Image 1 (cartoon, rainbow, N blue to C red):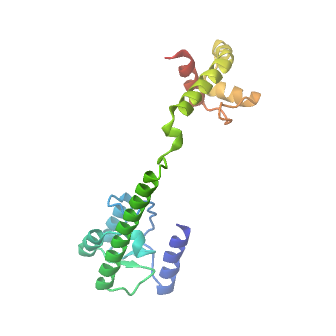
Image 2 (image 1 turned 135 degrees about the vertical axis):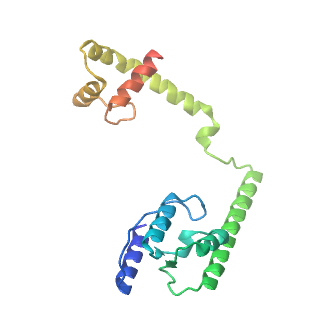
Image 3 (image 1 turned 135 degrees about the horizontal axis):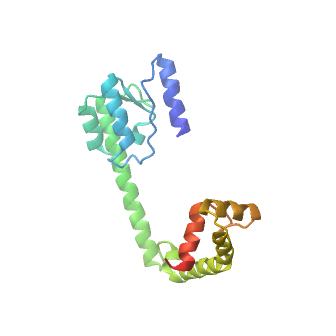
Length: 195
């Protein structure tokens, strides 16, 4: 992302342009629902500005999406090919769309072959519920060990936040070794009491 942003900034400096604004989109180019892109398009329409993107294939890998963008009232330019014509952009979008389909087909074929060889696909931790049950038992054991300390703090009138601070000051960490927060204390109370 930083390299793409830097490429856009360098391009604007090189052509002597002026920024109307900068938005960062982290969604995949294969997605059509892109809220930050929509904000950028709206900004460009209002300011009559050109939408600059670092790379065409980061914008979209869909010919239909690119075509719709070309038909909108927003000019756009890809910094990696600033002189590209409408025809060039259509061709490159078609190639990107085709490559996306090819990658998907290769991935599906490789997964089918692996499955045929007996390879178990997916997250092995989810395949066996024993790991989840062991995690639940460990959480219950930890709650049983720590709850007597919480009862003392409740009797002392401490708030959840004050309890978390007290645990941290005593050097007692959560079951996962992290610092306590009020929500951690609340969750442990609920786990132990079953409320």
